[in-house]
Length: 171
Image (cartoon, rainbow, N blue to C red; front, side, top):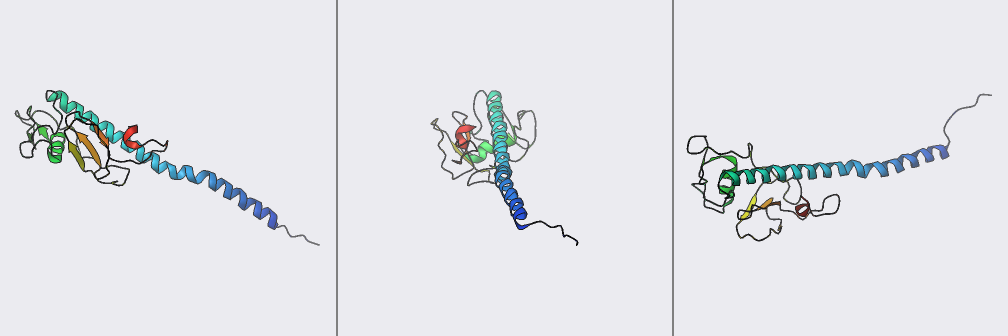
């Protein structure tokens, strides 16, 4: 008499249960990885932009980008802020596409202004520029918020990071 070797139904059920338990443990860690990557990108973007703002202020007698006209756009405008970080500038803040004797400073960011990697405005790079010296409070209408009086620059989101802290408070 030959006996057939096969798995019993109980053995198959045990294997399926073990695989289900392992998947339940591993899946959240895999999906959280993309959130962690976005938070890391946000931290890096904030660090680079804040450093650029501070370097601009050091080279322009303590005036932050956007606090003066760029020669075309008025002080306090988003475009003046962006131009003064992305183009060559003079001591008074006017900008030029090329470096020359009148525009020896910058650019402070080499590429386009970065988009925000988290929150409801993910993928956009708009900046709400203000100059009242009051603390910035996120309203989620733009990607970033900036005050040209204090130089404060934050991510404009109320999203919670993986450790439960709002992203604009954390970084």
